[in-house]
Image 1 (cartoon, rainbow, N blue to C red):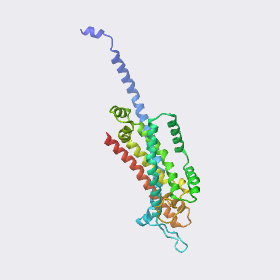
Image 2: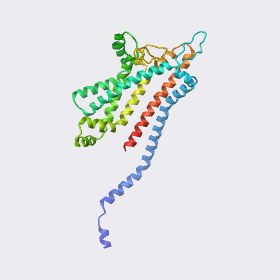
Image 3: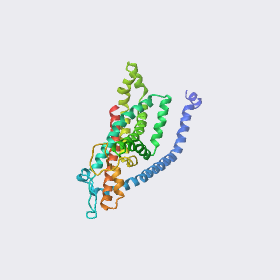
Image 4: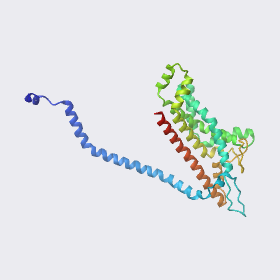
Length: 308
């Protein structure tokens, strides 16, 4: 019996496995070296990309934290004079202006963009392809062009600067960003969920509202918050249309102020107190954008964990 087994030819599967193991053992050292090199390159790239961010944040904190106070956030600005050159006012008017402009723009842009994104995700018609192309073009447009558009069709028509013109510009800025995020999030929902809803006899619109949108909610919320973070920090669209106001005003049809606009004006001032104020406003704006950006990641991650 032993002689018969010895005379059998070698098993080709075992022989192939042995060759693969020998080849892998010879190359494992080179693969580990390549892995370490690439990990080092990626780590160095991360450090280099963080250097400008940390430098900017450190400069903002160093120069702007000294003027931050409750009165700075709530009071109206004070114009320095030759007698009182060190007067530091507040940014209450700019806080209210940014809240009104960005808040109303979000109320208009979010539902409109989500509906467009839902239509683009579920339709492949010529109209949908045309709208998708328009969305891509608007996403890449320089934001100053939106300000020019609002100036020509709103400011010149109404013959007055106003927060309403800024709202129109910011709305057109937010819609394409949210639309792209909404389309991507909705396309990521498995088709089996829609098919299951339709198989139960639900209408297509009911399935979209009750099944598709809740599942895509993490991506939708991320897109909304990121677009809002971009809108809060935009200066170019509102620079031409919002006018200037040194007092708090909640009426969007009046001239208003905004945080980016105050930074632009105070940084060009010849008074050291207003330049210091510009650093404080910049710090407030960066913190607001950082909170919105991190908040979008946190909310999306939490909703995905709950869905699982």
